[in-house]
Image (cartoon, rainbow, N blue to C red; front, side, top):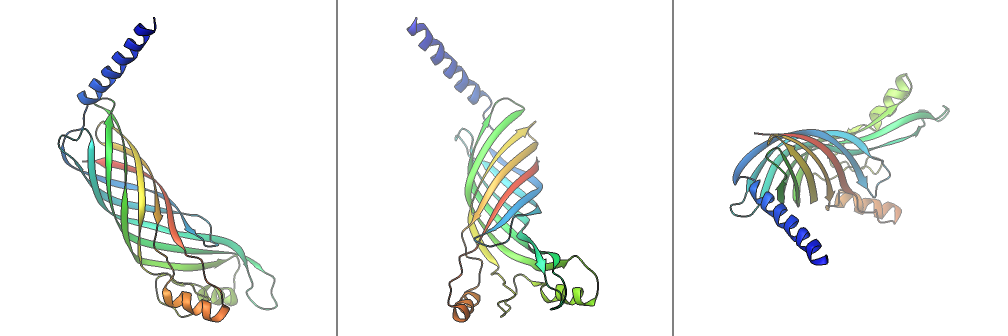
Length: 241
């Protein structure tokens, strides 16, 4: 009886492998357009997670005779950053007002990854990929918003609204360096060889603080700042051409 049971298992595995080869992805180059949502966080920073958007394009090349292995590279525009809800003192004699501070960081990003694709049928396929990314900040601001009206409120908001990547020598206005790099992975599902749903995570490895800002903070307060890194979780829809 046991021999029959093991034989059935072996036959099932062989049938599954044969089916996998039957629906093996076609070799060659394809392109994909992407649009989706980010949930980003500045790690080791007091600001909380923030929702943003991303869009981009990918080039996937399925390697010949590799049974679904592929390499991919892309070009993305992506929003990252963080936000914090707190209270702000508009004038020395006023009551604290509810306020929100945000870092809105815009990057051009180049992901380069290796992956593997498995097709269940002619219509359904799954894949996973892993590799580095390289990005440069092309724009971004720190913005303070206060619940209230009046000239004093607007002046306070203007004081703490500044460019996030500009080298400002002011410890009350922490700014970041433009360059970032790190590692990320994606898992995705594809329907009808066109429609994709992708989930991914990216971990930035570069310290976002500038060296001169970090040194000035240490000189004034005698304390070393923690290294701040980008973290990003994304949900993306894609269309393969």
